[in-house]
Image: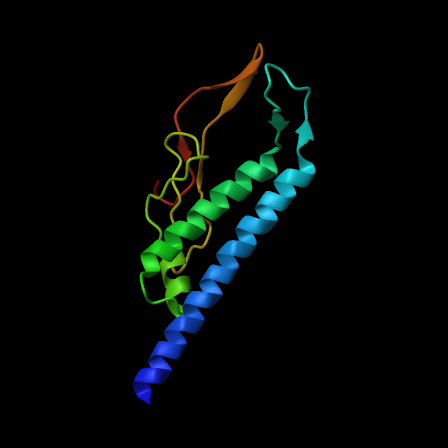
Length: 137
């Protein structure tokens, strides 16, 4: 009976994690689709202008995937929170070079560094070093 309970608990944990991930992906894509502004078709291609919320959502989804990978087969709430609170030097595809995600059980703020940039002509240009706000950083 203990074995059946353990299997059931594992299956419920997997289901909860998958539902959360699918909901994040669904609502992220729904928001992207509803907020995108189509531009005229050029060269047979329809392009969409996406705002910063879509980029942010993509980064959050990548972070959630990393946390679930770190959980392995133990998808309990306790383990998910433990893994989310122990990210070290994790980078998503949407972060600037040198910016990393770090969390700990006493510090849930994932990003504590920044990179200055200025608008030059028709694009943003990075300047200076990455500034880290961590204590002793």
